[in-house]
Every structure is written in structure tokens, then in C-alpha cells.
Length: 477
Image (cartoon, rainbow, N blue to C red; front, top):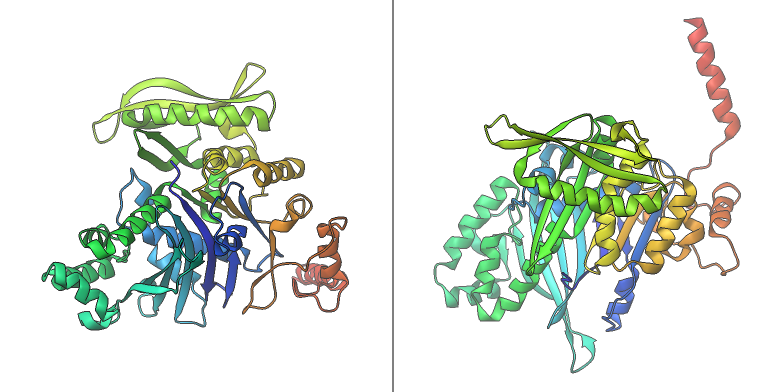
């Protein structure tokens, strides 16, 4: 199902050591020109040394998704992607009181609009938790008559730090317009602010707020845009940060995504599948698990020749809650020899966990995959071929961080580098000719140029001396 959504840009402030970071996809330039037939993929690779804030952008996507879908129970999606108050607190710059994420989307329906969603997250220093401080939703509508984008309009801004209705929701004309159709609206909004604030849920993307807009003729198109963006965030935004990826190797649990579409309905299952020995699962998701691994096997056999993945059904059983369940185990198959999947390499486990999301992004213009350290555990040649394939053939969007420089040779126009400037953290490399090698140019810039903006200089002899000094310290003890 093509929702007509495209993520155009992301701006973050004060997340980790990024005071100001901005990334935009190639689609943004096309959309600003009034070109909406986006048939090609959008890929952005973020490169830079360790500790250079590559992961901060992935963290921002995780926070964004958790806030937008916070009130929903899509199977167990809300448990996987919930807003973790303590974790988000630690992601806010230690020297700042708040962080900001601003995302611009294209909503390409009957009415073409850019939706700009901004969320401010504050810190409670006493309890060491983060909280949603404010939300703002603005938009620009494309005029077919004039073939240009109209001036940006603020639909609504919610400031949870104020208590009076006229203070915490603006503009006042917005409240007045809603009140004309229903005099009880102010009371409903007052209760909604209280409930969303206390639970750290989104006011803007809450079902109550969307229903209020939908019941008013003046705001029905805005309600449709919000509903579509919410569906997109739940079903089409796939975010894998370091925490998800590390679980694959540490506890042999695959974070996985599976979606089926029938009769214009989207059914999504997001969960964690234990691949260490036998798993006991609810019988109701048996068909989902079987279909999920069938989908994986189609791709894995082409990525890793002569390898198949199967799920072995070990029979029905009873769950701890008394409901019916079933036992199963995942195996890899090579030359008819079956071995438990847990014995495969971390790289293979990682590829398997991402395949379903990759399939979605490859085939769907309105899907995005965000992965931290995509190259980790993946053979360099395979990494390059996967990225080249996505660049040339995929329909959706893909943002990843990486250390492996192979991507600089195969998707050179889709790379941004993390810089030393915390106020301008993500920068593009200056244009180079098609005959030049971006990988070589980047390495030259890192180690030879005096105006290097990409990494602190490293003195190998200082490193060697540090090893020797540390060894002397140990010997003295």
C-alpha cells in the first residue's frame, strides 16, 4: 500500500553531542521544484570516526517513532518502540535542558502538502527522566494553479508547561474555529493535554485530536494527513539502533518486522524472536512466523548462496497464561545439513533480522529503513552490492551509519560525513569529478589536509607510546 509519504529532511538539536545537525534526502530538492513522481530510492549514508555523532541521528528517529505511535497497540509494537523516559534523558546533551527534533514530510495525496512536525523534549533533573515539553505541526500546501508552494501555516502548537488552554494551545484562531462546531471542544482538549502530558504521549498524533479535526470541515484534510503519517510511522518506519542490533549477538533474539496487506488493511507484527534453541510462541502468530521465514529464505538464498532458513515446528504446547502455543526452532540449511541458526555468525543473524524491513523498503516508496552500523558483520563486497542494488533498484528510503568505506565507492552521491563542528555536525563532501575516488579523497582529507573538518588528528607514535606506558604501569604493579 503506497501511502504517498516521503520523509524529506530531519533536523536535530542537543541530542548527544550534536548541537545542530541537519540531513535532507534527495527527494526534498525534487519536491521543492514541484516534482512528485518519485520513482527512485533515497539513500543517505552517514560516515565518520568513532564517537562523531553518527548514532545520534538514528537515536532521533527512534525517539520520533516512539512518540508518534505512543498510544497505539499494534500487536506488541508499542512495547518495542515505547518512549523510554530514562533512556531519552541520557540522550539529551548534558549541558542543555532540552532537545529538539524537526521532521519534514511530503504527504502526496489529492492535496499535496509538506508537513513539518517539531517536538521539544525536556529534562527533569530531579528524577532523571525526559518528558515531552512541546509539539508543533505546520504545513505548506502546493498550489497546482500557481505551480508553487504556499506560505507555511502553523496548524497547532502545544506547550505542556502551561496550564491555561489559551496558553498551551495556539494559535487562538484554531481553538475558535474548533469551538464553533462544538462548544465542548475546549474541555476535551484540556483533558487531552493532561492525559498525553502525564503519559508522555503525543497530543498531535493522538486519536482524540485527529477525530476532532476530522469532525470539522475546515480541518478534515489535516486530519487525513495526520492519520496517514501515523500509519506510516507504525507500519513503514523501520528503526534499528545499537540496542536492537546488540541484542542479536548478545541474547540471540532477532528484532523482526512482518507486514501483510489484504483488502486495503495493513497488519503489522513487530517483535523479538528467540533463536537460542527452542521458542514457545502464541499459536495465533504461528502463520505470521512461518510466512516471515519464507520471506527471509527467498532473499537469504541469493545473498548467501546454498543457504536456506527454515522454521521447524516442534508441536503444540500450553503457554504460561494457559493459552495454546507452539514450539519451534530456526535452522539454517546448507547442502541438506541443518544446524541451529544460533550457531551462525553475527553477520548472518543481523542480515536475517533486517531482511523483512529491507524487502518493504525495496518495494514501497512510502517506507524508510534506518539502521545503525549497517556494515557491522557484513562482508565488504556484499555490503557494496547491497547498497548499490538499493541505490539503483529500490523504491523507498534508507538511512544508515557505517565505518566501512566501500559505500563511498558505490553510492558516492548519497554520503554525508560527521564533522568536528557540533553546530554543523553533518556535512557533504565537496563535489569531485566522476573519475575521482571519494574513498581516497576522504582518507586524504583525514590524514593529509591541514583544514580537516572530519576527525581529530591521530598521531600513531603517541598511540604506540601510550601502549608502552600502560604496559610499564602494569609491570610496576
